[in-house]
Length: 303
View (tube, rainbow, N blue to C red):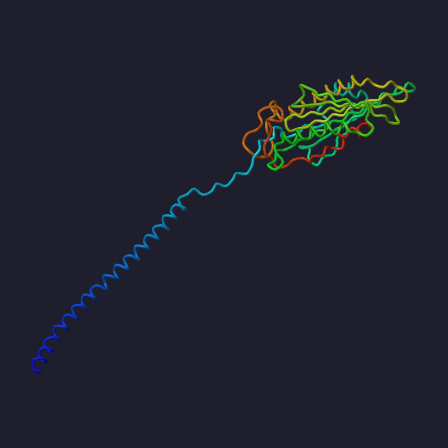
């Protein structure tokens, strides 16, 4: 028994040494595992941060979305209007209204650079033989370019079209005839008709023309009163067309030989010539009302 006890005592140190070595091995292994786990965790975080940085870099490096530019239109070719009472020469007035050269009556306008009108009347009284009556009205309407409404020339074209159409629907008009005109501005037309009134039979001629961003309306009518002979409609129409060309030339001259742009700021390129509405104009600050001045109404001018 003593030997057995001695063997047990001698075996115990050996077992304790083995257990201690195992503990040391395990203790040494734990930091390695922790380090490995920590490295793995750091590596994942680093990759995530790297990916996030890459994504941010990609987003930050991309070109910011472009802001759409506001629409622009070309500058209106004509920036002002001539005095409506001075657009016809004295000689022309003597032919049109022989007894009313000095009867000019300027229409009221809140903006003379955008609209204007003037009227004349003539009564050649021949006593018991009757009288020859003439009435002449010139109306000018200018359109500025506007980003919302479009170019001045396009607006003028639209108004010209409406004006020429409205003239054909005057109450009481008879024998209406529409004649397109050439060689007068960018576009022009003549409308003539008969209008019966208690004073007599009036021969009405309305000629409308567009030159760049300006619309010219010329009303001319005549009548033989108190038994006087009714004037010839063809003669009146020729006289009105001739006067229209003179008014259009006055509008162009008021803006310079080439119609130099002088309207408010908009985009950069003015219209190059007095061409049709395909060569329109640019953004300006204001545009006149789409309604014409009252003197442009043929029914009133035939009063």
